[in-house]
Length: 440
Image (cartoon, rainbow, N blue to C red; front, top):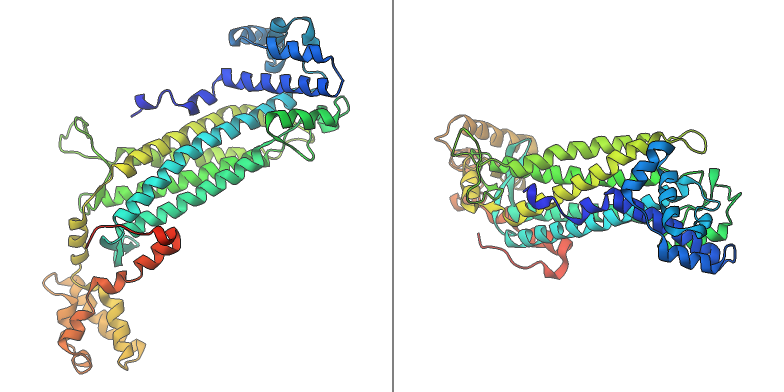
């Protein structure tokens, strides 16, 4: 699994090479904007566009002396461009380049993440439709409650992942901003028109007001969206892990031929992918907290955020992309056992129909208190004695027998009653395309 993941585009986006490439795009676009406004010679801008380049190894060598990554970067570019390089970085401050390039980088990363998220959403939709009518036990507090369908469970995650898509798209919109406003953001040494044209070339919007940096609430929103996505991935992972427990075994993540579950116990089939996703979700939450801490910088800027972001942004995006990749494999290869679901529904011998029996007694004239007392008394007997079932016990109750026929009591213990609105829920979520599913 890990080896398969070593070369995707998400990892490449967070390399030094891509970071410096985006910084170079910002510098070149600024020169082109200045040339359009007649602030530098047009010929110089063309030369800069043609010759601008850098060498990562050279930047590292210069940075050992400068102790400043942007000045080291500019020295490397200057070496490649020649005399016209004197126009590069004219009137700009380091954060103009760094923050604008980072906005581009984050937008790239969100786009890659959204592509993988959409594949997960499609996979959940297919599984929801496939198992729309397959009944299983609904549980609250981990205890049998009332029947649901496995399709409904998948539909819930489909809808939840769609909300994560909306959050990421909205975070991308708020992140697609740059600033070329100079030191402390006052445009003292750079014409605001240069900023507008530069950002138009780059496909970004202009921050209406900035200090020396783009404000970090934008970055925190992105990280919060990643953390919420991680929470939803963890939620689905935890659900599958519960369903995969030996005592339950209603669904399990795929287990490939030759895979080993344990070095000691050859029989083991462990939910390792879901456990891995669960663990990485914790990382996303911690990193989101660090991003929130970055919002409050001193006055017009400090760099306390910078070192943090160089860790949390690549780590979080790469982790989130990996989690989605793993989850898609789990969803698409999910092993589902409808027969075990039916067996588990029957394990509590009719207890799960207690509410319907309660309401039926109320409809026949008993007070809620009287009806609840009758049902609960027999339900507790059923819990304690595995030879008993709730339907048979209720047929022995005088208050029940005088109001219902035997057939009417037995009819209270059917699955169809609980699942009659499943189609309604699917239509509400998927519209008229909510078709498909297995028979019960």
